[in-house]
Length: 535
Ligand code: FDA
Image (tube, rainbow, N blue to C red; front, side):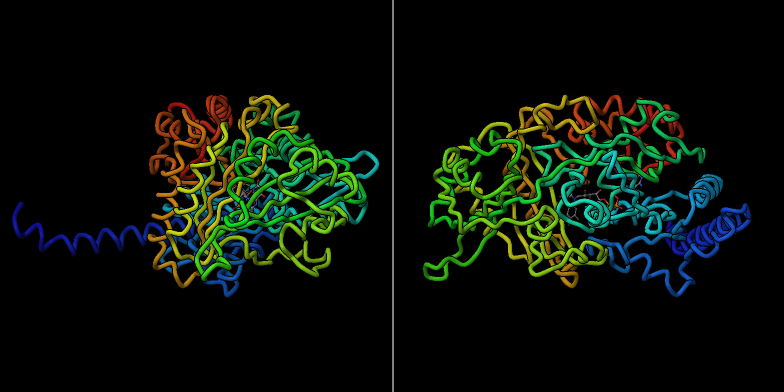
């Protein structure tokens, strides 16, 4: 290679760069032109819901539901266009024009994707933001509801509670999470030991496929209906709305949090909990969260283990039950609070003195993660030996971050009764509990993010001998790109199997089959989308 080649390189590079910018700008303009060329009755207003970087509200719309500020940096790839549809026809048009001009679509409901997959992409892309798709229609008499994907869990809880205080939907505690992504990946919450996951309680859906067809359960067929209930968001098409079964909750529920430090025998209690919690009656939700705190002894660091529970009943029933099943915890009546189901959501969200209206606040910022964060998950099938916890605790001291924590969430109950293949979510019988790993930092510390990422990866590596193996299972709604990625551009079955079997076990193969049928050209794709065969 001669020196001339080297001297030509920057010029060549600039020419190539500017020509690729020109191509990009051209396809951007053509795409916008395509959108505005549709003038059906329904779609006349599409121009009002298109945001480009030239609109003053583009940034505020984009940032409105970025939930992980790790993906809100100036160099984070931004969409060419955001479409916030008001009608299904706006979605159909956007799909049509994106296909025509080869732009990728990212679908956003609540924006809580842990890896930012609903609002970032390495290739030129358009966001379909479902923020205007959030109608909720509750039918108390038949105990069902239709909820649009852009609604939050809080809006769904609120909508049901307005009509009935003894009906609800089994979903998560974080009320700002979007129904669209949450339902797409499974969705566990305080009632999952009693009623299963969100996806176990979905009975119909409205879906737009890659050809812009609007399908319901009957017209999409049982294979696709199976796949969209837990196969992970962003792989098959766009779910507009879901029909769900409502479930019963008593007028009074009881909550408690009992916290113990290592000096107060926390390790022994945690070890015992592994045997007790998965076998508790279905009416009890049980979890432990761990964080490092200053010990009362000489300002040393210690671990605080907080045992959290929700009981679907009154305190006078709960106390004898816990005394029989877990006397070592020493639960007392004064540790417990009776409240309504809807209040218990605020309790677990650590919202003090809040009213139900807070459930409607989509921009509510949690202190339980982030603002920037990385999370991972694991499943535990055999109790961790008591002596092994010492090593685990010591790892928690290793990093200084805004938030460092792990949580254990007990499985069992109804989860043991639902077959692994009933939905794509396979983590059912045989799991004692799930582990959630979480490291969070301030946005200004994004510059140091490698330090936090290394810490959590190292901790995850350390835990490998205590958790599920072959595959090491993970929860798809705790999206983790460390466990494997699709190839850029094209997705191969072999490569996707690496992460696919961790999220879905054997169900991955059926998901690939459904994908091949519904979207053989792989239009809906992202870094961990289900690949079609032969792509
Ligand atoms: P977002 O809009 O980012 O979508 C997530 C994924 O789904 C993306 O790939 C997106 O493209 C796709 N998608 C979104 N809408 C779609 C649609 N309509 N059709 C097709 N694809 C769509 N989980 C849980 O089970 N229990 C819990 O208690 C919690 N708690 C929790 C707290 C906090 C603070 C966070 C950040 C996350 C959770 N989660 C959780 C995880 C949560 O379930 C997961 O991140 C969901 O995918 C978030 O859904 P959103 O719609 O908010 O995200």
